Amino acid sequence: MIDLSDVRAAAKRIDGRIRRTPVVQAGPDLWFKLEYLQHAGSFKTRGMFNRILSADVPAAGVVAASGGNAGLAAAYAARELGVPAEVFVPETAPAVKVAKLGKLGARVVQSGSEYAEAYTAAMKRVEESGALFCHAYDDPAMVAGNGTIALELAEFDTVLVAVGGGGLLAGLISGDVRTVAVEPEGACALHAALAAGEPVDVPVGGVAADSLGARRIGGIAFEMAVATRVGSLLVTDAAIVDARRRLWDDYRIVVEHGTAAAYAALLSGAYRPEPGEKVAVLLCGANTDPSDLSVATS
Image 1 (spheres, helix red, strand yellow):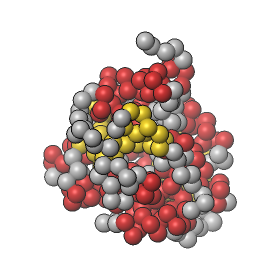
Image 2 (cartoon, one colour):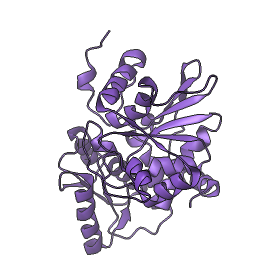
Image 3 (cartoon, one colour):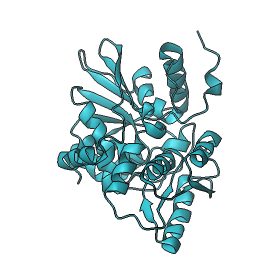
């Protein structure tokens, strides 16, 4: 179990390398944590810096498997630290993410149709090369680095967060903030694991699969969710699309569909705050193509 001491140690280790992202008020008791403004466009840069800085990196550099954001974070952190990076992504990864990986200097390998297949290919590469593997979510150093966000949200009663593999959820729990997990109906690895009493494989699909499409919840996140009795709220694809559109129309905020899932829990009524409850919605990633947001709706 990762705890607050691990998070504080991570914060010290990555200090000066990551941004303290803004928190803006969006309503009487509602705030947005703009973590999508983090280097490389998502929260995962925190975890990747902590993972690499806390390890002895071999000459072969680092390898990551990702739906996109973890790979971008690995590529950015590796570039800043002067080490080679190789990133395996599914063939279905958004073109905007693949292009950005190349710009960050990573060698990009596309393999399989979903994250699990890219992961298998990445592990084979690690065995061949001896590179340091940087897991996208189920790694103690990644979790502790992600948890540094919690240190910036200590004043809030509740933080709503979208969940894929669970690395961000576990980090927030480690950072000692009350966290509510939100998942799409089509990619609900945590929800299925809690129902089964253990991590299980789930089918993956829907509009948020590129960033929340883990086939199985990470062991760290599952154990921490059970220990702290964190449940999972489910939202539909339609609610996610609506939330993403509303973030643009109402606030001129552009995020990924996966990120919008957290806000969808509020708009759809899946989560209903108590009167006076201070709620922060963690907007965790914005590596997306904004072209479908160019025409505002009324």
